[in-house]
Image (cartoon, rainbow, N blue to C red):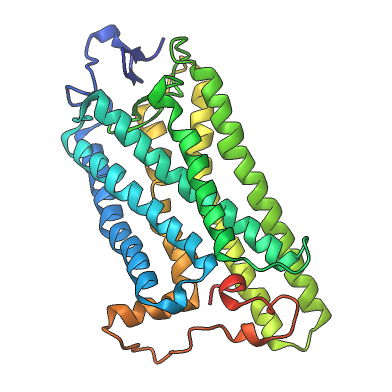
Amino acid sequence: MNGTEGNNFYVPFSNRSGVVRSPFDYPQYYLAAPWKFFTLSAYMFLLISLGLPINLLTLVVTFKHKKLRQPLNFILVNLAVAGLFMVLFGFTITFYSAMNGYFVFGPTGCAIEGFMATLGGEVALWSLVVLAIERYIVICKPMGSFRFSSTHASIGIAFTWVMALTCATPPIFGWSRYIPEGMQCSCGPDYYTMNPHFNNTSYVIYMFSVHFCVPVVIIFFSYGQLICKVKEAAAAQQESATTQKAEREVTRMVILMVIGFLMAWTPYASVALWIFLNQGADFSATLMTIPAFFSKSSALYNPIIYVLLNKQFRNCMITTVCCGKNPLGDDDVSSTASQSKTEVSSVSSSQVSPG
């Protein structure tokens, strides 16, 4: 065994030398140099400093500008709420713990932090799935003419929270558990042990299949079909400048969506799966720390991709920050593509194009 397992922790360091201590009671500087913990705290401070105002501003702008209270934008607001969950209940705790070199809030605090961080991350993930399904149905029209209403948005939001709770809640009640991971400054599900008392094996299989593989398949299928549909419409009307613009904008948005998703979750999921499949294998604390902390950046770039690249949100944000004035002089918050009669841009710009 190349790690040390306790009642509520697993430290990726052999205790043959007798230096391993509980990550709830002692600094873990035998796992990594103190400067690495300081670097983690600085990184978390950066995410807090940027993620909190961007996500909060998204909520303020939406409630302040009536024109933004459209069904599709409710999903974007849900993304911002998920980001705030991660920032307020996950990043702040991780920042303070990294400053001290260990998880200072004890096993109960670990369970709370792990639950909140997992909940926020899963709400964001399933919100992306709802967005993917919405864009596929509206643009590709597999169900014929379809209007995404407030009722559909409400059902979609409720779905994201139900799915997130089915992922984040089980470890609280004994199906797996939340323990410190990596450098022991943040908590997540137990991928490290096969403790029969917590049925970790079945939970990890469930989590990877339902809460990673399924979203990946849905997102790739939906956006793949969307790109093909946009290209078909553009090919049918080569002379339409608005169609060409819609193709470029949607393609750019889709590429950023897929890249953002893969950058946030694939490294973390891959490393966690490797650790799970290689129980007892020797690995450094930083092996899990880097992808775990990198996945937290989704709370920052989600609003950048899904909100700041949306022309309506972008202009309303600028107007709000600048006390009612837009120094860029662009007061047209609706995409010019929304007036096109093509199959692609006949949907409102807030549904097709980011800006």
